[in-house]
Image (cartoon, rainbow, N blue to C red; front, side):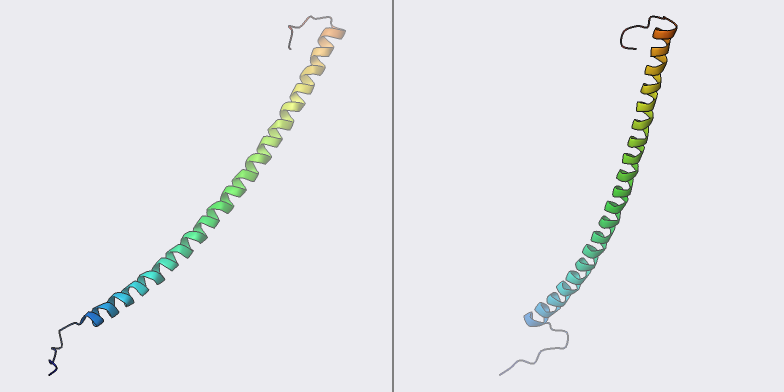
Length: 92
């Protein structure tokens, strides 16, 4: 004879179903978090790319300025030594 169960009694099958539904909810939430993380990571990567490009431009700009300054220094050194006969230290 089957036992009549009370309304508050939970069977193993009921519990298994509740756990499965809970895990499905967790899976959906984790998927959402994973997608959000991926999007934020991509934004950070894009910002780092912009910063990297900017630093390269700055480096090139100051590299050209330094080359220009070295050229002008050589011209001045040549004028001093050749035209004014001023002896400059070696490596100047």
